[in-house]
Structures are given as structure tokens and as C-alpha cells.
Length: 134
Image 1 (spheres, rainbow, N blue to C red):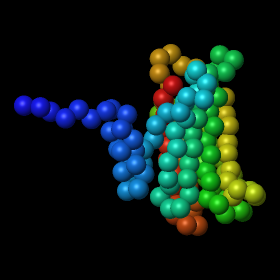
Image 2 (image 1 turned 180 degrees about the vertical axis):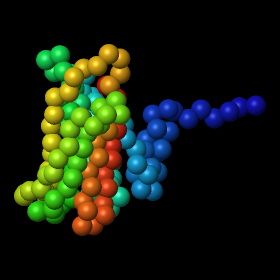
Image 3 (image 1 turned 45 degrees about the vertical axis):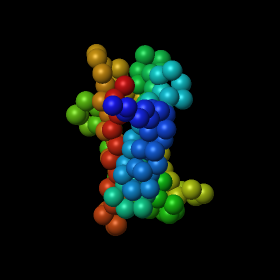
């Protein structure tokens, strides 16, 4: 019995294309540097989020971003580090992109560090949430 062999690269490209057109969130790491981890996805409404982390000067630099394409929105955000809230605040989206970003330097704990970035726009009820481990 002959079984057709499908090249892995073509199968992966087809899977990504199906996921992109079906609205399924596919969060994959993009390694900009040897140690730079990035994730991105859609929020519960029309906004998008990005989360990235990298080792820097013995610590971990974490950056969360929300892009709603609307200027002047006030969002509440927080960053959890291994389950504990390490930073929180409010941010306003600004021109020209209608986005905001927050950056914090966190302790590099023993083992794998897990970060959760969450932002809420109360007026619309929209929630953004992203996670990554480094």
C-alpha cells in the first residue's frame, strides 16, 4: 500500500492559512533575538494585543501592548509574574496608532518565568489577555 507523503512545510503552511481565515488564535513565538519571546493575538473585541519578554542585564524586560485603533481610550492593565501581580496601572491609547504599551523590568526567578498580560477597556467590556514563558 502506497501512502502519499505530504511535505511538512506545505502542511504547516496550509494549517496556518486555515487558522488565519477561520479566526482561530495562533500564538507562536517569533525570535527577534536569541532570547526574545513574542506572542500576539486578538482581544475579545476588535483590539489586538502583543506581549514580549527578553533577558536584559540579569532581569527580564516585559512589554505589553494593546492596539485598538482608537485614540483616547483608557485601559486598566496588569502583569502577573508566576501568578503574582507584579505591575498594574492605567494607560490611554494615543495617536497615531490608537495604542498603548507598558514596559517593566522583572526579577529573573529560578526556572521558567511565566508572564500574563491582561488589559480591560471597561467602557466597551473588551478584554485582552496574553501569556508567555521565558
